[in-house]
Amino acid sequence: MRRLCVFCGSRQGGRAVFSQRTRELGAAIAQRGLELVYGGGNIGLMGILADAVLDAGGKVIGVLPQALVERELAHPRITETHIVRSMHERKALMADLADAFLALPGGYGTADEMFEMLTWKQLKFLNKPIGMLNLEHFFDPLLAWIDHTIDEGFTKPRYRDFLIVDDNVESLLARVTQASV
Image 1 (cartoon, helix red, strand yellow):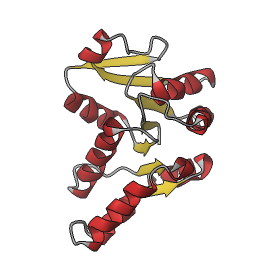
Image 2 (cartoon, helix red, strand yellow; image 1 turned 180 degrees about the vertical axis):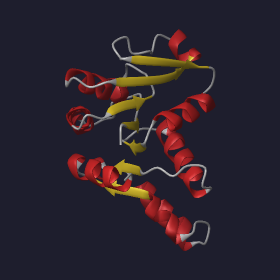
Image 3 (tube, rainbow, N blue to C red; image 1 turned 90 degrees about the vertical axis):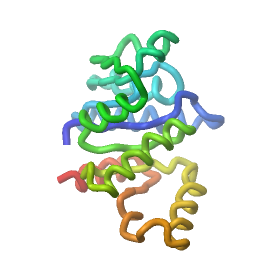
Image 4 (spheres, rainbow, N blue to C red; image 1 turned 135 degrees about the horizontal axis):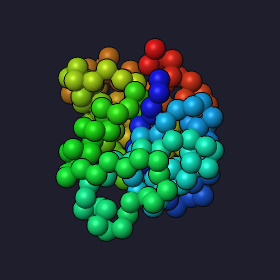
């Protein structure tokens, strides 16, 4: 694995632990020699993650729509920036650039990006590992909903295994890396 795409919030969230653990993830990504692919922003967990990778000597590739560049949200320090026309193009390019995906806490955008990758994997448009860093049990309600869709017959049980869930940065990176081999 060469590149890891991380989906995360454009806000920091209400608890300092989210920022702290995001910095930890950024450093670990760089230490493993992985390049970060992300949404290109300089705010929230996105900005914290990019800064942590850069500060640890890593490479960061941002992908963002022109409309967000115009709102001055583009990170000025990242290694490489790809400007696209739409959010759809953003997700497609991020998927092309990355060898695996991780989700951190975030809002609608984070969920949209993660579920798009899960859907593409289900439809066999994509065959790359997808992980979730379940910081402080942030994703527990979402995981319960996924299990509910299985219980109600809307999702096949085998698709639950598409999502590698862990609350430990090093353990999750190891599991996602191993799954990509």
